Image (cartoon, rainbow, N blue to C red; front, top):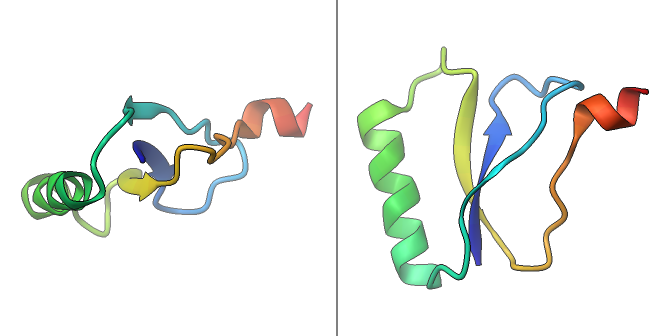
Length: 65
């Protein structure tokens, strides 16, 4: 599993990035939840998400060109 950033507002031009790779599902869930408790809010431009290893990052800038 890996932890990635995602757009909180569904922006078309947002580029997702990898925060951590090869993360255990249990610890990954704990890390994402801890981040959301400390830094998360409705007004943040991005949030963290735990995804499968084969997940392909979305590159909105590349998609729009």
